[in-house]
Image 1 (tube, rainbow, N blue to C red):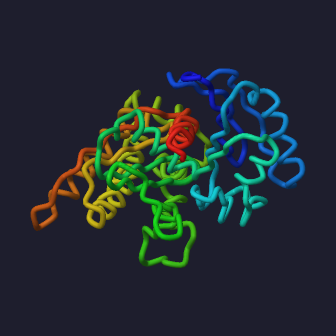
Image 2: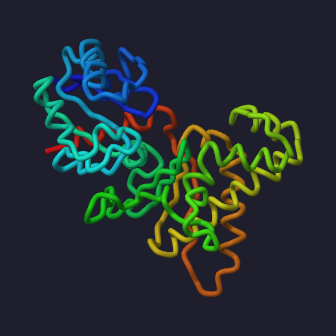
Length: 298
């Protein structure tokens, strides 16, 4: 019983990653399937298919998903890209279908909680986790726990405005500037091209010494550092963790830290300087965080 598995889902706008996780954080029966998010019936049919694969022998279900999530009630206030789940008792529906305990939570917060439970934020009292992906996810840690806010939307940093001259321009939301598409746009502008590159290709060019790409990464990192500095001025944290698949790129973490130091050096009064680190968990962070929260559930 001590090592009984938990079924874990990471529901994204494009794909659902799933498996069974044990206390050693091993993911068994791992799989991936396209998210059917246009019709609620086909969405649940997909989940039923996944449950048939991973449900047997598990003691419950832990779910990471987009949106503003009331994890206490298991209620999706919004489903983010999964609009079919807006204002829904999602955990209640899953409990009814599968007859097991269920925990659901916001994906960025799950990624941060993986670090709180098992990674670089373990034992840290106050921290910020910034998750770079399609958009920019955020999570505030207070007293070693996720700070959800009064209405469960604390840490929704995607919607921070980064250009006060274009306050009503959605293209200037932090998610659109430092998300995947924003990164590509900065690189394309620096290179004077409309060619599309993957993140791996961009950093490969950087390692080869491409000056335009290095300049673009500098600019990308500077924007992140500025927003992280603003958050720290408000929250006064011990550590800042950068996550998402791109956080595996050591060059990016070094550049963010360098730009953060430059901004910090201009601050006119004494201010604690938090460390900036890469998250330990990358592609499995959401699954691991959901598992941890499930195990903490009363």
